[in-house]
Length: 188
Image (cartoon, rainbow, N blue to C red; front, side, top):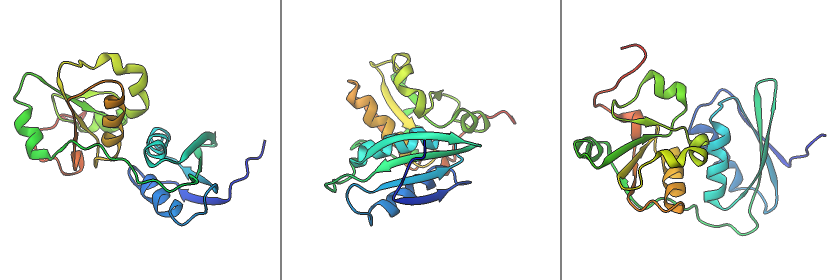
């Protein structure tokens, strides 16, 4: 079946958050109801775009994979709604200070390869795309600090956790892209 899209966005070869950034930039100039096909090669783009689409009020239609390219289909909402952001954020320095507390859980929602090559030692890895299935692994009695590369995926994860009843959830911004504290990796 051939799927017709009104617009095509090439985000192949780009890593998070660039597929979302480019989609956000393109979709604001589209007409209500227009469908955009976002082509990407980043495996994490499916969960990222799906979560962003929901938080921005647009409609995620689905994804088809063809020869290593993910084709994501998004329909622009009929009424432009402001993107919802998680209200509770901390910076990297605040996270570093709070990691000393026993009541803290650090959740890393980057893809497993990103986590393997560099992560904060105390972090628990649950990629954003697996969060719904693995949410029961997260202790609701703890303060949950959520980190990704830049704060985009972690924001979406914070929103999901809050929707599921977690009440002490904090998005770490800017996240691993500017983390200067201790890290572990496959290389060390």
